[in-house]
Image (cartoon, rainbow, N blue to C red; front, side):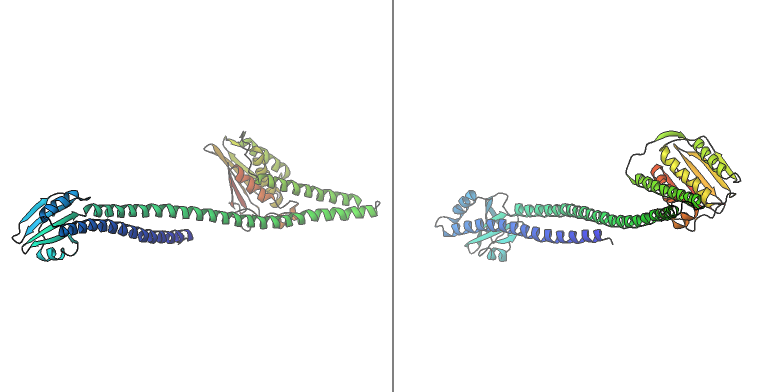
Length: 395
């Protein structure tokens, strides 16, 4: 069970317990106060009747009519005769038992669930009864209980939602913090690799500069200069690729324009054919015009065909296919080279040592392909039917 779920359940239980406890106490206290007030009127009416020297029945009529609450006066005899001196909503419909009549002479008792009665024995076979309805108090208490349930449900929904929202926000903050830490670690690693890769050609160039400066007549000077030129070009390419990776990583809008995908691929194939005349290149296509960032598309394709030229035998087969897909297009490139030992699912490792110095590259080509490919659509890597690398670019 997720932490957010457990936290929501705990908060819900606490809120429910507190609401029920406080609400029940308030309802009981409110109902008790109302009943106590009714009993006070009932007892006061009984005392006034008992203390009066006038006719009890006349006093009972006057007391019930002047009462602040509906008070009914009833005359009951042993012959089961019931006579209403005053009749209202506080009047009982049944005759109390002899035991109830006797108990009601000392205190107010509940009768027929919704009435309170007090009795006065006026003769051996006769009782004067005061009765009051407590139904309004009971209805009020019932309504308070319904309101309490509604309040608990509303509070649960509100607090659980608030807890979930705050937890998600905290989780998002933690997630961002962790992501920043990971990005910082990757940046430190990247800067370390970049400084190492830039230091290498600089060291070579500085060494050859010293050799040349010490002996300008050395017959190997032209070879030294050529080596310095190669290393400086490799360093320039590395810096260019680093800047391009940084630019692709920025959150900028893609500059889309309509282009002929078939013509762009034909140009790249032509360039590869010029470099490797013996290479067997098969190409199939259908008319395909797309809206995309041509600069990023050229970055992907240039790295794709450059890697084929550098990392596969000059006579290794290459297959290129272009097809339309809705409003976009799909480019599939397969080669018969050695391929990759493992196909990563996320970003490729920058400065791949195995694919940089040996073939004169910067080691950033695969990263550039993936980043630029994801910017204009999607790109995936797999094993080709020729045993090499298969690249699928969807625009």
